[in-house]
Length: 425
Ligand SMILES: *Cc1c(COP(=O)(O)O)cnc(C)c1O
Image 1 (cartoon, protein in one colour):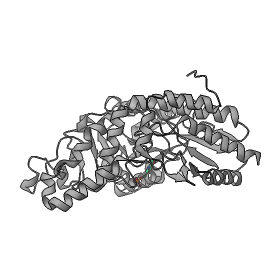
Image 2: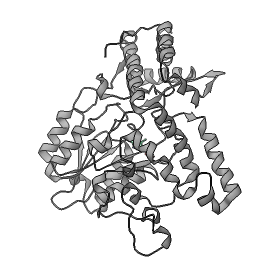
Image 3: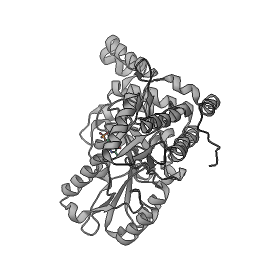
Image 4: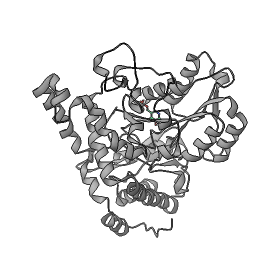
């Protein structure tokens, strides 16, 4: 993209004024810092609270108070079908058919539930492929599944090492491991966006490679959902899971999500079952035989936590109105601006380790502080003291994620000016 970026407040303000999504910022509560709004870049870790969330929760509390058990049927949004109220908007966000997505549990739980069905090791094909730097929960979950099936991680866990200078992984490396070892890989489990480097993986190409080798494939989209316009149905992985408190802004510990591709809608794969996954039309006959609801709903265990789903419902409506493609368009410009600023103004202080190609990154930039950990910690603390909120990843990386729903071009400039002030001290 060839945008003529400029490192001036006038330019940044003009961009913000011309931004077709600018009004969405007002729908969020920006945390204060010393009487002013902070500059929040941590939507990759915990998204900001949409203003609509409080009323959404209070409405359910009121229905509970006024209706008690009758709220299941007579609430303004009857609780019986509550998970269905988020379904269409969730499908929009991840590019799926409504029947392919469900909001339930937390990410780690969903990862296990999906692996129960989609990791079916045999003596010849028992390995799981992950990336070497994977998020701890993903690694622990995969290892424990391998052990649960009586295999050993030392033989059945394949960890793909980064092969690019900043710790990112090339498509060639993925192709190589799948070509060489695909026959013994039962499941490929990769992220959509790597949490530490911010690298975006090519879900379509990786899915095709994995399927060509006869592997099942699932993605952890914790950092992809609400960040990239996903096309899960068309790209065709067998499953995907995500959490909803990062870019999806659904609140701390929010109800997570899962995608099961349509080809498995009527699957007879083993699963861990619960009554809420039972065929909706006969669920309340309370029979002894489990008949799964077709599609992703059939993996549900329990009746959903209404108070925890209410924020997700409110938040997803914002994504629906903004549109994932419009958000991505702004995100490319916004993160592109930050990257350009760091590159042109701060090259002697910071180094961006996230891939430079816009197609290989989302909102997040992972920024290495040159000069080592102590300097890095000092800068991070300085930024926090000025109300500029990113997050820290050992040993020397600050993650800064301009979120297109509520961040501005001015925010990127605020960050850069603060780093300059710190550097000049
Ligand atoms: C945030 C994140 C998690 C967190 O898992 P929870 O079950 O929500 O606690 C797991 N994996 C990845 C890749 C993440 O980014």
